[in-house]
Length: 436
Ligand code: GLY
Ligand code: MN
Ligand code: MN
Image 1 (cartoon, rainbow, N blue to C red):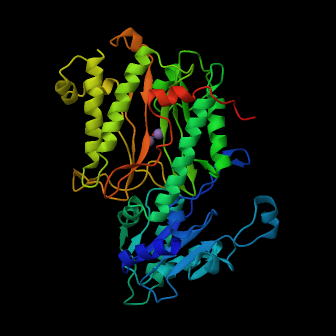
Image 2: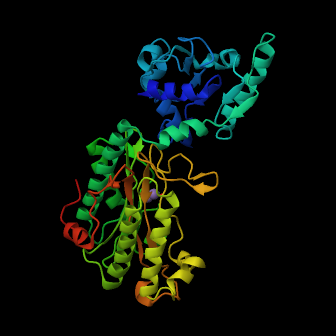
Image 3: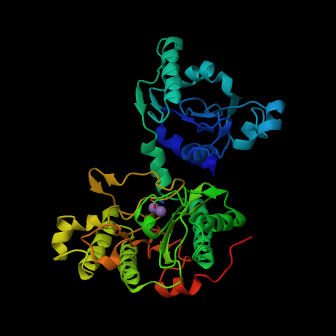
């Protein structure tokens, strides 16, 4: 699979050379690093999870001498502390690259690999240290070449080619995304089931993340958001340390990553198991808007149409409920709805939760194509101190988010197992104990 990804990219690169760096480790606090996760592009092209590695693709060279991996050498002493390394000798057979070298030889060997190519693909501006390696190698290649040899003069962004591949999901990627989606949806069901007043937000988070780990997911796709009461109105709330109160809604935006593929789901539910009338009124508007938007996730429809339909249904609901004064058309035009709906309705989803791929082509919103996956996530957030809003609605925050695969036919909601209607949700809340 990874070899196929490399080959597809190399065919499009023609006589250019491409260099990809593994993600770097980041210090968290004294001697402790943040959990390491390989960069998505690097993993997509190698399947290799170790840091301190560099992939070079050089299709301008002869067959059998085109793909190179620089990586850490075996080191029995370090491996006792930090775990096993693949090592240089094993890398070609294990990863299907033509040649492997110790990472210490990168500066000496990279210039030679650039010779013969007049264009270079590199993600400029993501990491200053990586950029410095590239610039030094280009300079050295110019000194090193023989008369008549090309060296890279044009620096290109690999996103142009690679991210278009990643945007159109292969069957293997869709299978992984479905696994992530199913685990995530079941985690939300468990979250609802264990919810009761008195629990802390982080305890609800723990139950959901536990179920994903038990189900085979190694990590979250992004830090889980568990916002109860007024915290539901903080879009990227992450403190997760408030105690759930009876009468609160809790908004949970959380998803797992399965085999480097993300899920991104939001559900909002009542802590005591029953939506109050104002909570239900807002919830039903958001749900109607989400269902209408999902209907628009069809091949040929512009990506922006999904947002526009969500905005229309939300604005109608806001006017009906007295949050806004109509007419609806005017509130859409003057963007009055943004007081309560201030974000977009979705984004690409894939290896990254906010996945790669362009949203606009030549200035227009691109058409959806089979194999694309996007989130659909409308919401309404009424700040607790919003004196313009009817009092009953203040402090209510609702978002509903699913992951949707575009196909030749009907949109496929990968996360359909997460309870979503008022009745489905109310039937689940409080029905299980916290795992112990
Ligand atoms: N979880 C981040 C988002 O919904 O975009
Ligand atoms: Mn989300
Ligand atoms: Mn999202």
